[in-house]
Image (cartoon, rainbow, N blue to C red; front, top):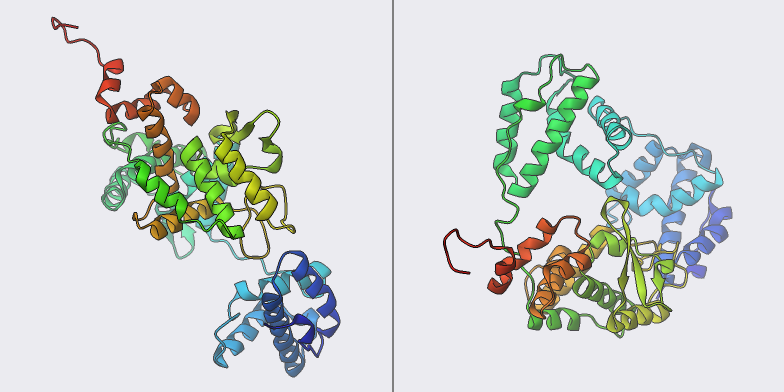
Length: 402
């Protein structure tokens, strides 16, 4: 194993080695990873010396020149801006090297940024929903950009329809429905801003999608056992993943709700957790004993001591920062592949929690409370997996028997 203290750095960056090493250790880098970072620092310092540059001359362009030279020399690790980011970030915070060049944003991105602000301020959407709308309409905005100039003045209804048809053909049904809604919103914004002369939102056709047409696909009991057993609970990663999977499959939490769970959201004395859900809603859920035990095991023996922030679940690799919603999904996907049950997503475990409650005799209203549905229609889909539950929703046929 490499020893960071044995790495020698000469040249203009030599004086910054102790501080950089202390920062690497402080954010959780292992000895070998820290040694690799110091080796990279040594290469960069010698390159600066040979190029006749001081640290103050290490602009973003010069950093890219260094990485290109490293790739040309045959190196395969730490050859991208991501690999150099810890060192440059440290030197920039010290003011030793110039700040990163701000990327030049295109006219399309500038418009999308203004549209996002409109959604947040004027429409009152939450940040996640606004970001989703922006991502969905980005292809349409980019398609109106010619030689760096946006052209909406000549936009016609037929062009809008052509875009909708081409996009709906290549998108899943649910995503296509969201796309047409987002496009209507964008066209209203463009009209309000005077970028199009006439309102065109009404020309966007509705997309036929019956939300209760599909069956929720949960896992059966054997698959759940295999999923949980795939986590090696003798390791920090296994403890973390086991706790995450239990929260998803027992409490029906969304991946984003698990990612933002903070230490203060767990009320050990009352046996409850605070869930920060969609639409900035904050609700309490009971903390089952097995979920509480898994959380306590991870917090005591798995969560990094040098973790940054108050989030419960942290990344494995340094720096130890909070997991993202995508990271939670990756935990589920990896565990399902290890368990040999195919690729399972985090949302499917939410269906699993609801289906298990239904199997144990819970009412639809109780399932809706656990899943924190705003509308009873959202919960009604689970009645389809049990014919007895369908009788709670079905109306008697005129003239028929009860």
